Length: 164
Image (cartoon, rainbow, N blue to C red):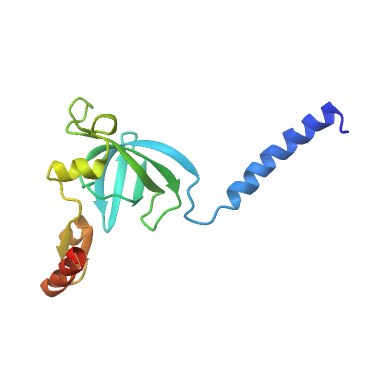
């Protein structure tokens, strides 16, 4: 049997080392911290970004359907590595709130009241998926769209796939 004093010393030394080893063992892109983030959405090239009120930014990954540039939101998610957008990633797990104003007074969507964000977005007429047509896949239309196709023929092909 290990004496209590020695056991406590081992725990104090081993616990931080195990925590560091566990965090280093996470693969790139693996979630490592849960957060609640509040701020405005904007597009930076193909990336949908959240700029918090304190100036910190996240590149949103995961299910962002129904979210648009200019939205003032509170999101729940997990911090992940930079998805190639120049900021830490935030894997969105829930949209908690969507406001119309800067002061958090006029709430358009509230998770506790409205439940599922996608259903709310559909009921409110908010597009769930936007498609842009851009020959080079760049430009203001492509940056605002969820999906970009190079020409109208590919748009028709995509629509057929979606409704099939």
